[in-house]
Amino acid sequence: MEMMPAELTIIYERGAEGRWVATIPEVPGAFSQGKTKAEARENVLDALSELMLARRDRALRERTSSGDVETVPLAG
Image 1 (cartoon, rainbow, N blue to C red):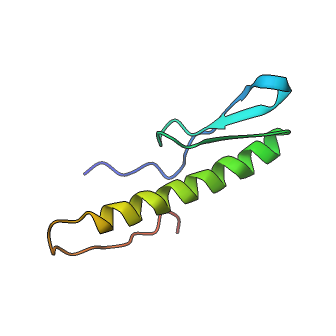
Image 2 (cartoon, rainbow, N blue to C red):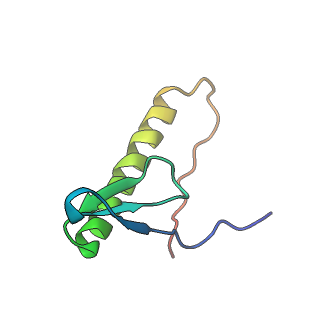
C-alpha cells in the first residue's frame, strides 16, 4: 500500500489589489487569501481544517451502511 504524503503544498500567487492568494492543490476547494503570505498561509490552513470537518460531517450524515468508522491522525 502506498503511503499518504506527510505534507501538503501551498501555492501563493498575487491576486487582486496585491493580496496573496493561497491554494492547497492536493485538496480541491482549499484556498484563501491575505494581505501577507503569512496571513494567507494561516487563512488557508484554517480553510483546510474547516473544509475537512465539513466534508467529514457530511459523509457521516449521508452514510448508508453501519460499517465501522476510524479517525486517523495525519501528524505524529
